[in-house]
Image 1 (cartoon, rainbow, N blue to C red):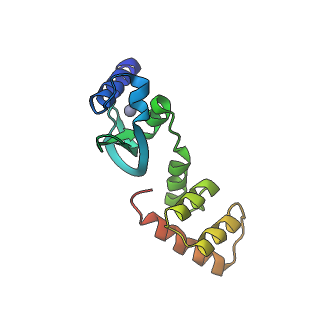
Image 2: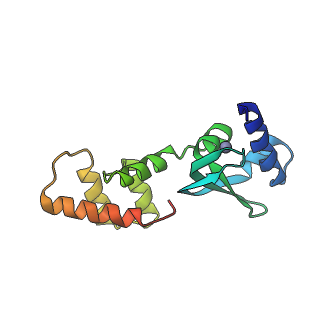
Length: 146
Ligand SMILES: [Zn+2]
C-alpha cells in the first residue's frame, strides 16, 4: 500500500468516527489516552507494534493508532513513552520524561521516582541500588498500559 493511500485510509476512518466533517475540526475532537506494546493494525491499515489509544470527546469512541501516525497526522508526540518502554525491556533506566510520566500515573511513589531520576545516567550503582532499580523496572514492566 502506498503512503498516500495509508494517509487517506487514516483520515477516512477518523472522519467516520468523528462528529465534524472538516478534518482539522475532526482532529481536535480526539485526545490521547494511553499507549501499549502489542502487534496490531493502525486505522491506516499498516501493521504496528507501538499502539496509541485515542478517544473522541463527543461520542466516546476509542481508536488504536500507530505511534508514527498519531505523530504525523495528529501532531501528538508520545515517542518518549515508547523510548521508555524500550528501556524497560532492556532493563535500563528509562528517560526522565517517562519516569515523571509514570509518577503522574501513580505507577511510582515519589521516593521511587526521585531515586530513578537520581540514578539516571549514572553508570555505577552499588549492589543495593541495583537491586532497587531492578525491582522498580520490574514493577513498571508489569504495567500493560502507559
Ligand atoms: Zn498508521
